[in-house]
Image 1 (cartoon, rainbow, N blue to C red):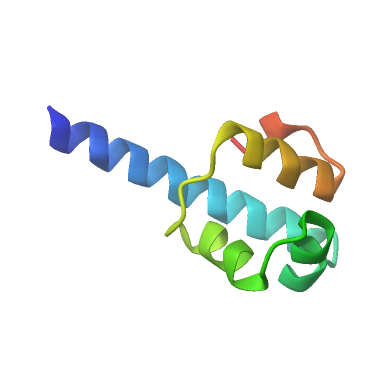
Image 2 (spheres, rainbow, N blue to C red):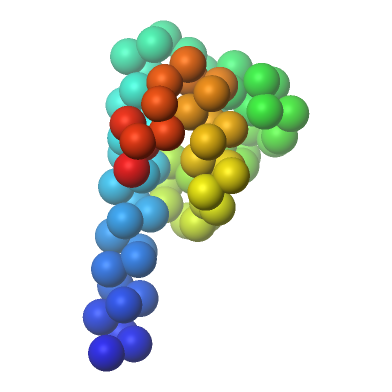
Length: 75
């Protein structure tokens, strides 16, 4: 059961990253643009997009605000 949960969570983190990247590119923003708005390093945004970082709900809300979208559009 734990293996299934871990797999499910990893898939959700990857989907979040793909949505983030797609929206960011559609808005013609760089990872650096988002990073500057959030006051984080560009590599953090890269990690979110690649699915190697598991964002908290608060982080999802902050990223959505930086992109000027609703958080539900990222999840």
